[in-house]
Image (cartoon, rainbow, N blue to C red; front, side, top):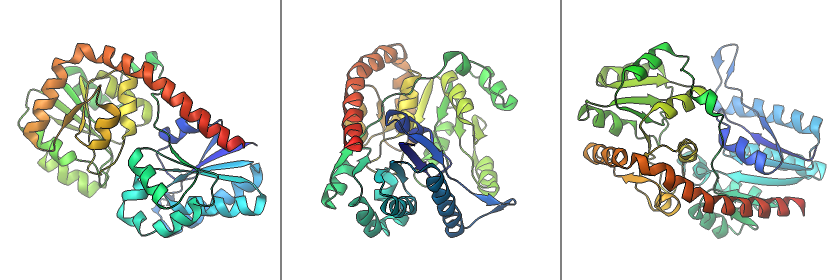
Amino acid sequence: MDRIFIVWGREVELSRYLAKGLNAELKQVYVKKWRGVKLPALIRYLVQGVKTLVILGQLKPRVVIVQNPPIFAALISYFYCTLAGAKLAIDSHTAAFLDRKWILFHWLSRLVARRAILNTCHNYKNLATLEKWGVKPAMVVQFYNPIYEEEQIKQSLADKRVEELLTDSKLPIMMVNRFAGDDNWQSVLETATIFPEANFFITGGASERLMKKIRQKAPANVCLTGYLPHLEFLKLMNRCRVVLAFTLRPDTVLWSIREIMALKKPFVTTDSEVLRRYFGEVAVFSGPKQEDIKENITLALEGEEEVKNKIERFLIKDRKRWEEEILTANNILNS
């Protein structure tokens, strides 16, 4: 096999898209539970490390591309590549540079990154960090929009509760959310209290204890959907009038914005330097206060009819940029 793309995580849509552009076969290695018991992170990584080595040993790829974090996936891949004479490439997400738990392993990230033939990242702030580390070659690969099958996305949601609420809602608003540390769901709950004419559909699964606590505080116009499979997630997005994509993490470019634009939906996102640089032509930006979010949702609704044309114009230019970046990356991998 020529190339494989290793991911140690549950969410793989972003890496699936990049793997396709790099002509690599995606291999998801994710073990969360054993016999119904949630595994501690250390045990999970050990199990995933063994499974990764088995996959690499069986397939014997010429090039191994690996998602970081966790850096341990890149470390295991590096060991294999050193022994097998294969090439290593690393795709580092923003969390690898900014999340506290991964900052502790920056020394290891630098060590492995310097031994890879290619390091990709997702925005210019991340690239500045790689360059500071002395990593070469390094480049930004900022994603292009995925393409979805329209007929599938127009179907009803499998969750009858969510489907009924969505059907009855005159102003459905979706928040892309995972209940991760950088998700600003608290501000959206607060916004719902002053925006009773809208129905807010907040995605993402969390512990039963946290979900119970949120349900007790959430106003009547909030629907907590729980974790949605990707197609169900897209169906919901397609039916909502405006989509919210917020992050509390600085210097982050959200993959969800690409999914939103693929469906040509008006969206409100975090007012950050990085997001303004990449999506200033098409997004509505908001601060975290509930009044600001409500005002900017209203602004997005007013421009609803213009969004499709704005996104189409944006993507004409953006496709050329994507093709150039992928061509550069492939040339390096082929060298």
